[in-house]
Length: 65
Image (cartoon, rainbow, N blue to C red; front, side):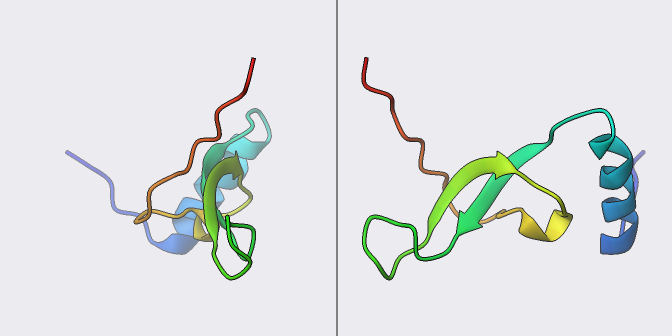
């Protein structure tokens, strides 16, 4: 058993969740990578399903104590 969503229906479902929750997902930040012409993928708050990066690895920045 499962559900099939198109982009519009999935965005509507996310909009209903935004009222109660902060939703974080892998997101692409262009031109903010280690070098000036590279992109970086980090977890950030999203506003739409189109912002989610599904196919690249996330770079997790480690904190120094």
